[in-house]
Image (cartoon, rainbow, N blue to C red):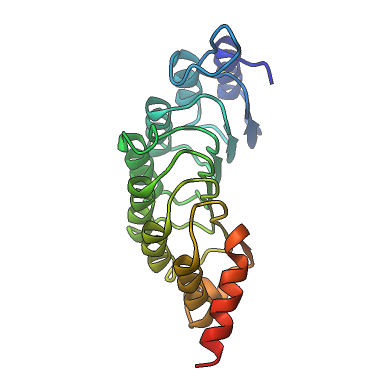
Length: 231
């Protein structure tokens, strides 16, 4: 922790000349600047981030961890452009960044989805604690149903709610996810019942999932599965 805009600009220059760098972990750095109290200034200074995004296409970087770096809608839009331009990312951690401004602006998430769908490399994305609500998770469902080839999806700690989560799970039943995190998403019994349905039927989801994080809904899911088993 401690890298700011100038630091990430320098890193971007280095990445352009490094032939074997596979992982870049920058979580909790103030990549877009900070205020006088050391808090993120969301999307404020794009210069360093833009340089990093420009360096990603053509680089060997496969894993990018930029959790809690002050990224907003503009920042994730730049990243989406880098992915569309040829970045070979396989794992992307965006957790802790308000990439939709709490569902007020979906343009960055939409651009990210458009970059993910044709990607032949991205397999894992972490969107936990991003302030994603109903509209945001609907956007996630769109790019998954459009053909995004993911095996790991984390959406924990987002205020999604049952209705939108059930719609997402309906999409996920036909997706070969090995890991799903929907903990702390303000979901209850109806989500648990839908998830139990997916785990009881012969779905692609059931066939391969080996890590499922559901937190406080776990008991509800077990109850729902027991109920289904009785019918």
